[in-house]
Length: 140
Image (cartoon, rainbow, N blue to C red; front, side):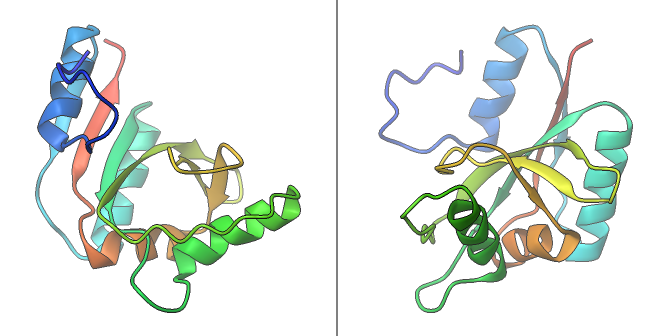
């Protein structure tokens, strides 16, 4: 949908917009970099408007597991997956919604266990190293 014929390269924010528009979806670019707290507020506002957010960030760094990586490792352990989430490059995830306890429902394409619910601090951890920008997407 976004004009790239391979899965061997990453997808950028512009390509996400192209793909969503090709599918007839509406897009609101979230290009402005804000503080991590303001970015969480922006995400919460988009979710409250019945939109999903394709969010750019960085899950980790070289060295000990970050808060984001630990959240996925905990989910792996709970579901019996004998692997670790250690990706540390630039990355995009889909923030799909919120739980009643305020958790963020996240689909990470690297996940070995599917959708995971993250706390605000766990999602902030993904945002602070690189990003917090992205696209809000919804069905018109």
